[in-house]
Length: 356
Image (cartoon, rainbow, N blue to C red):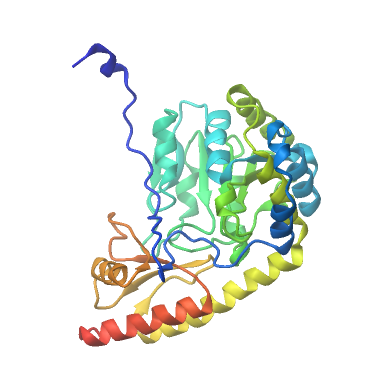
């Protein structure tokens, strides 16, 4: 082996869901919003002046920082913005998790968490969820260098109660607790009201799900100014202009249109409700979802078989070949039209193969 090869960093990267591009496909594998962004966003895109691209964007991302501060009734010093919530969380790892003690997060959760821990050389310990995929709050009383919880959790779709999450924060006042609320708008319990009570709490959210802007990559965190300042210091240490000008411009319009935001969420929740009813009739079971996806398993048909059968019909869902969840599929909620086609296919396939 050449000497220089010995110095290469080797790490197993995060694997995102497939991004197929096939005519007539139903793509419900990456929890994207099936509806377009707010009308104000589309208007801003049409009116955007390309000549502005020759200029650097605001290095502090002030347009969107101020819009979010106003939306949530916070101070701008309490808001951090990054290139998607993945970027926000990565910076949080670098800025906030610097103890020799392990950070704690569940064994079944967003699979980027352990990748970041390995990448940034942060010690970590994965805490098993119980048999119902729920967090056992007492497991997080152990000594630690920080805690990271997705709530609602992915891929399970389960939202823990505000009381349980606060109990974990209350029993870890010497650690920073990050709550990843990527899916909270679809029925979860946000801990944002707890920020004034707990200076060790950071809440992370995204524009990728409820605001229909996954392709624009906008994420943010809200917490006390000391945490936000530490994260900004890290951000400015390697890239002073992380947020591009179009993202800053269009994201502001997405925040301003609260009515469209809430209406879109309700459409997805209504679709989720009838899909859950129909899937139960076909023999599926799943946790009570508080996200824009379902985490389903069938009483007879193996998940991998069903995943492959759906893929052949250009219906793309997410299959995880991992211990404890390898007989589950994560199914994002699409439009009513898309989900009706999915239910029809599932019913036909299960009947044809004598699973129902």
